[in-house]
Image (tube, rainbow over all chains, first blue to last red):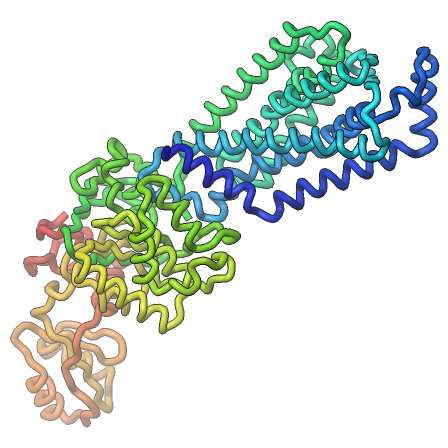
Amino acid sequence: MMFRRQLRHELLKLFARKRTYIGFGAFVALQVMILALLQLPKARQAFDKLLTNNGYLPEDYYAGLTLAMLIIEFTIFLMGALYLALVGGDVVAKEIEDGTMRMVLSRPISRLRLLGIKWLACALYTSVLMIFLGITSLATGVIYRGRLGNLFVYVPHESLFGVFPMADGLARYGMAILLLTVALQIITALAFMFSCFKMKPAAATILTLTVMFTDFVLRNVPFFESFKKYFITHHTSSWLRVYHDIIPWWGIAESLVYLAALGVTFWIVGAMAFCLRDFKS
Amino acid sequence: MISIRGATKRFGGRLAVEDLTLTVPRGVIFGLLGHNGAGKSTAIGMLLAQVMPDAGELRINDCDVFADRATALARVGAIFETPAFYDYLSGWRNLRIFCEYTAPASEERMREVVKLVRLEERIQDAVGTYSHGMRQRLALAQALLPEPELLILDEPSEGLDPEGIHEMRNLILRLNREWGLTILFSSHLLSEVQQLCTQLAVMREGRLLFAGDWRTIGAERHWLRVRVDRQVEAEQALLASGLVEEFEYDGRARLAPQSDVPAVAAWLSAHGYRIEAVHPIERTLEDFYLEIVHGASRGVAASVPDAKGNRPATGTAATTLDGGAR
């Protein structure tokens, strides 16, 4: 009962801020921009050519589902990590910076419990954001084309080329969003861990982005090809694998376990830093 | 109520609190005095288990604050120099959030506390619109919600206007007298501490210089102000005569044990000085504080006797409330 109330308050702190909605609004604006860019003649021609060369009719596939997939891919690539790093980096460090953490800790609540509640609130926030993005991407595509249509997915770095009829495509899109929600928790978790150390919220965000960017760059360097299973971004891409003809569930599970293990490690390191540190104005 | 034994805390190479031993009895308003960086906030931080001591033991109501934090802090309320809230939420919602971390308060209790701090009319407004004084009162409300026995106030009058300071002082006195709360009051506003506390501790550079009832310490010694035409010459002559033990700034002098004000006036007159003023003065907390702090900075404590009136031979004049010299 008490735990539920505390969690509700933590969620209220996150969702009562204007900037949360400004952030969500910015995502929608970005999605509309991506849609507009996809209409540029060159982009459109490249898309049509790709499908025609493989024996498909562009008109069958250039619809809501395919656009939703393209929009969410670009949205996550351009702003997903940044936004999650901002939220995760803020959640503890900002409260310490503002002084509210000291007020909270003058109560006999255990630091571990407090951190647990904040972590959970953060995870829920990330989930809400990802599901929101999944829905708005689909809505943007459907509103623009007026129908769901079939799904076409092309992701070169994942060696992925897939076409799916509408029902199957929609189911796979739903699964992909759920997997994305789980996989991207790692970015929030990383930012959360940094946030527990003695640093400014912006520093926690920058560190998180630095780690993710370095990880992404190194993973794409041919020299590290044989080590790619150790890179975070290799595993966060696991959501795309539901678009393979035969879904590699084992590989996806392996990625999720790897991310979960990393997440737990981040949690333990963050909690240790938080529990051992001094709070003083 | 509070018992601190041998608490020591270092931040990197800097010693913030050194071997602090202090006892605060139940039911008093206990002042914690010291300049900025003296170690007051660190001591309070350790008491609230927010700062981990390197050594020592801290107990509230006989419970170790680190071993049994939940019990030790269950009936403790605290406010800090700059009260921080979630500015985008209402005062009421903030109170709910803070109290529900540990002990949810009933609506009735919340209303009672809000009324006590006189925030009824603005409690539903966003805290971002509050003045500093209102934030301070809201902080006091959140500290009072868990029905505390002990209230820890770290510089509560900081940044308040004179009216706000007056109001805060009255509220603290009321909480002590009517609600029976023990209050640990940290400040560097000497006038505030003087009006609120009889018992206090003085810290400097992390060390305890004094703890006890400041009014009884050295009360047997009397002070006077001497203003004559040849001031410097008169001061030296009076010191040589043995009627006065010490001169401070602005003609303030401490009488020798067997001397009195008429004797000094008579002596000055007899020696041809034209007297402008010779009158007894009441010692303020500021005098007492400066006496202790300056004594410590000179490395002597001879001017500050302990609770029994004995002057320590060396070191500082730290005493505990039970009168024992450290």
